Length: 389
Image 1 (tube, rainbow, N blue to C red):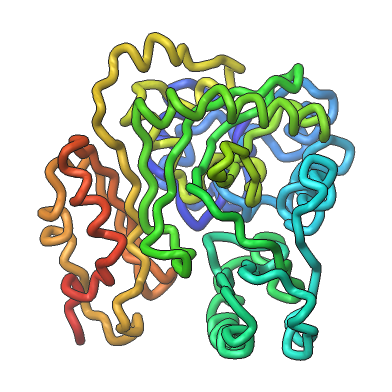
Image 2: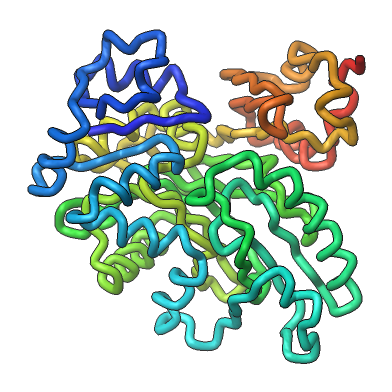
């Protein structure tokens, strides 16, 4: 069963649902879709009854459904599982037994201005306790950066508070936590009816520097899956034992330290990558449909899949507005010129810069020896593709 919401539904997930006759909860939002009449619709009250009896599993493309879930599914496990991950303070407290020496602290924005900086083990990361899309996230390396970054944060909050509902992005309370040194990865997975974890994708998330907290570049490959699948699966099953997770999809962000330890950053509940991104990329990279596997409670046959793969990278490039131009001063964006930067673009998804602070997404396939076309995007502010008014 699916529940769909804005801000974005990909053609791929919509086609998957229609072709497989998967049931979709008939919410007011869904009625605005062009293919509304093609869906296998289920009334909200009927869906609630079925889910309360444990006779189906639920997937959402968007965290904008959290309010609906919390209002309608109180007699299920979903609200508790959502809050376990959505509130970053809750998540750190629950996994504290696995990482007893990991520093974190709950704090309000006004308290940060008068904090005792001698008690903070720099470098640290600050972020909204309920957040999304790296909005309001900053790395602070030392005490001298504290107040200047708080000023930047306050300016950013004036804008981002209007983008998402409070269930998705709440900027009243923040978490300060120790900066985790190591490579960052994103994992699409789910926990089946027995609480067993199933991995559907692992992507490396690269940055331009230790200060960079953007979501510009993610990529997956045969090598990444081979190197990380087993140790990631072991951690996820440990997380399942600790929390009792069952019949639940998750997008996990984690870092792998130099000592080969997995430390989770956060988990995004009820979905895989936001805006239908990383799960759709898995279809390009590995040839399976993650939404179908979750609905049918099936596992990828990773041995066979990897045997058929070469060393190419399959990438997701997020075209955030780092141009220096305000949206109201942008007349157009040259997508054709952007796509010409890549040897094999797979798909372009455009986003209205006047609604959200990004121009869209690009999926690409890149040969191992041409990785520079991907890494160069980390240092490209995209200003060259902007057409000013």
